[in-house]
Length: 639
Image (tube, rainbow, N blue to C red; front, side):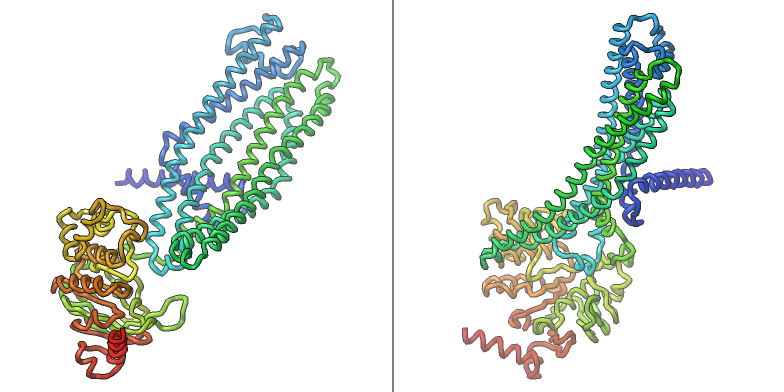
């Protein structure tokens, strides 16, 4: 046990050390970053750490590539010294000692042309090897990024699915799906990190070569690079702002696309296709404008860096000439020429490194958005623990329920007291806005009551495991969720283990089997978005079959027949009546004719129950129910 604890502590210490190093490195590229945003980048890195073989392969490949890059440049420096005819007096000649030791070749014994060709040949071979290892490092990082995309998007999806209904409703339609797609962009951080690691290793190899050639010139080069770095922070601030504009435009675009493209019938009825298109195109334009400005700024970095590097190279030649001449009589030109070649490569690497900084600045806004979604300290989540609820045995009780939505101070429900015995049929009626649907949502446990309690067989909704509580109810609403899948797949969403026999049986009960068999591919027919290939009555019967297939003991019908014709409504009512005492039925109705047979009818108004009883008793009271009944029956007679 001690060994196990010691091993855990050791691993935690290593993890904390890696995290501190990561924090420091990230701070070099981004000056100000919130803790949640840094956590998102850490999550991406953690995903990579899980694949240690690929991570080591990337690091090993980049290290070998940097070594060959430095060695190749050293050989090029030697070749320049040889071709200028003053090999012995140049700073680059120090590398000759290494060549003699490694290959057993005495460079002084070779003629100039042969030596030049040998050095260039080895340098080219070194560059090819460097390119191969660099490609291996990139390939390993691409694989790491692929895994990271899966991890971060899975985390985003699980986070969103864990949100409570009230939390989900705080996001406009389309935003959450946009966030899931946006999270993939952040994983490009791994490619940037690989590029940064590669460039830093190469920079060290360049400095190593330059120090061998001339310490004074190396110090001048470092000073030049530092001066260049001072001019870039302003660009990065601008890049981050443009990146934020691109991110916000992407979010708004996702929202507009979701709202308009999912309402094709509405747009065509009112002739608003052009309007919707203009709104979407406007958002596309805003995003592209911000993207264009950001890409222009990023494009400025490399040419500006290259131009300044040329100026510094010229100054380095002038200063270096006087530093290296120093009265020794040896020509400084071979060392200067070789040094400028290395210096130019160093500045190119610095330029690419700053390009990586620019890319990080550009993805920061996306990281901030994803970080906000992944935060847990400011959101409501569905509880993942509680008492397991079994199928209803006695009753459902609502005791002194009061409720209001967080964004509204107005009470939606007040003093609700109701007992629903097992096997009974309860009808809920009232004008629009009376609180009927909210009451159903409370019974389903989608919203916790502000006051009072809801109990199922004595188990409080606040103590029950939410998943098992909701599993007891099958719901058919006015606009049932139907997916662009086959009929069979739509049914099996609630019960993936259902057999074909069970599916056919529930469809017969719901009077759906006959129309399903008339479809081109029967149960395998794909029915389109929201089931648009079916009629309204067929969709509702399919939804009823799905609710029954869930094997829930409570069946909730939330105005399931309000938009149907008389024939479709009658078939659904017949199906409900056939369910018998095995199901407890709670039926919210607009048409009183669908619930007059109920064991109990409650009438709601302004969030309160104002009447309760059976159909006959309520008519005799001559209250709100009787008024609604008289209105509907007189309207039916006139029709």
